[in-house]
Image 1: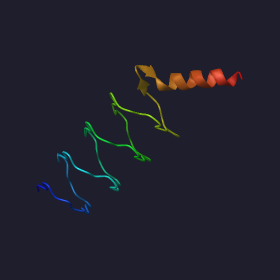
Image 2 (image 1 turned 60 degrees about the vertical axis):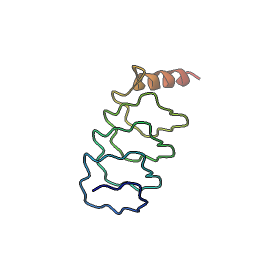
Image 3 (image 1 turned 120 degrees about the vertical axis):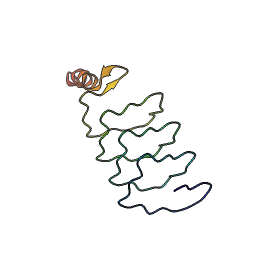
Length: 101
């Protein structure tokens, strides 16, 4: 199905849209639940204001992105790195530095 130059509200349930392309599309305000984005790519996208809860981001790569004011809470960091430095090592160093205060 092709939707070109249209404004539509889509109600999509129990659908397989794998391999679909979204170019210059406005999905703001969309509600996504139980969606499989495995292997998806997001290039030159505005994801500001997203709330991500109980989501598997294992193996995700984030490059050249604005992470200003991003907040992480209750996340598992096993194997996660920032510029090649293990996040767990950074957290351990921070906790050790602050434990002595």
